[in-house]
Structures are given as structure tokens and as C-alpha cells.
Image 1: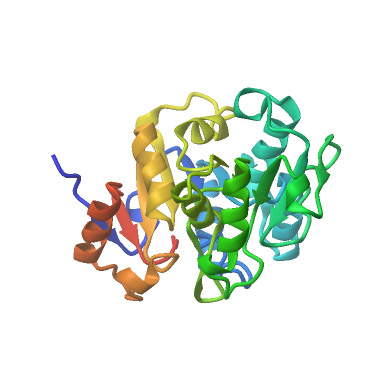
Image 2: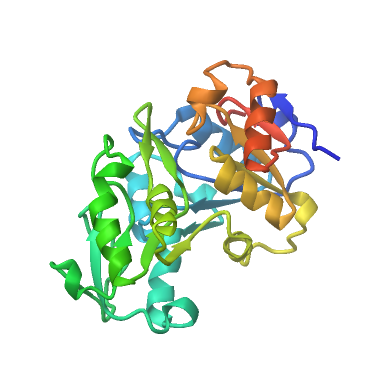
Length: 289
């Protein structure tokens, strides 16, 4: 049976059954140029109403860096019971060297954004200036908001020919920043897979990552968990895989398809959900109380 998608204007109208709320960062709390004030107010009201709130982001930032950024934007970090990032999880996966990371090597060639986000801090990994000396390639963000996949093709083709894996922080194929839809590492990973390369990604929609984010919350029951995110392929798909409820932000990464209406377009939302085989319970234009 196909899930009914209910359009809502205020999260307060549907929050009653949920005592634990997982929120994304990009597209939910931020558009890349500061935090959304009505989303912050919604968090404060949810906390006052006794909800546990978890911030789970596919960002490559370590938790400490993300929290510093929240402080700088005057977001009350105390509303969160836990903060989890793909970058933090990836750091510990690199450190543990287990599973897919057991034989990954120690020399990485970074593509995209050159800024250091601390994923390799304190670990025995070295950046390679020449890709021919790399054991794997690593990406955590695009170099510029205007980047397109073709910018990365020569490097990806070279790496695929070498037979080395690509490690990505996050699975998002696009992100919403400063009102624009921008390339994200997941799209580069998809292209690398098409070229025959091995990819290793960490983040939503992996249900194990979401379950990990809930580890510290007492007495969690799936029927009482709500995930709020702007990406149907990661946030909503992850909720479906874990078997919990979800709300899609329509004025986020899918805004060009779903439109900018205050009341979301349910027909468009269902079409998007069908395309990705990922179905939210609710759709709301922006997180507001």
C-alpha cells in the first residue's frame, strides 16, 4: 500500500506522537548563509515540549567544528541531545581500520574542496600531491558552488584506471546553499561507480548511521521517532529503511522540482517520492513550529 503524504504548515500539528526528533542541517536549519530563524524557534519549542532532539548531518565537519559553527550563528546548541556528523564517523572508521578500511592504505589524494575538515587529524594518513602515489582518493565537498561533474572526470578516469577506491563523506548528490543547488560528493561517487571504480561512502541513508545517532537516547521506540530532512534520497530513504516516520522540507535541495509554495505541492512530492522509492509521512515548506 502506498503511503499517504500529508502536507503541513506547522510541525506542532503532528509532533504529538514523537518524543525523539532527528533533524538534518543543510536545507533544514541552514541554507549555507546562516541559520533559519523559524527552524531554530521550532527546535526551541520542541525542546520545551520535552522532545529529544538529535542533529544528524552528512557534513564532513567533525562534531566540534559543527558545534562551533552553530555557536557562531547563535543557535542554542543545548537543544540537542546529540550531534552526529558523517565526518566524525568517518574519522573513527579511518582510525579503526576495519572492514572496508582495513586495507585502504595511508596515502590519499583529495579532490574537491581543499580545506582540511579534520577527518584525518591525529591519524596515520598522509595527503599525496601526485595521484599516482595515492592509495585512495577522498572527497568531502565540491571545490566551488559552480562545480559540475565534468570538472572531476579526468581525475576519476585516472583513478579508476589505477584501481584505487574513492572515499566520500556523505551520500548526497546535491546540496542547497545560498539559494542554489550545488554538486555534492555523492554525485561524484555515483560517476566513479559508473567508471568501474570502488566507492566507500559514510552517512545517511545508511540505517546503521541513524540507529547510531539514537544510541544515547533513552527508551527509543521506532513509532516515536520523526526524521526531518530536505533530501529524499538520504533523509527520507534512511527513515524508510529504519522504519520510522519522516517529514520532507520542500524548500531545500528539491526546491526547483517541488516549488517555493508556503503550502507544499503534494502531487509533486508524490512524484518525487515515486522516482526515488522513498516516501515521507509529511511534507512542509520549511521547519516551523
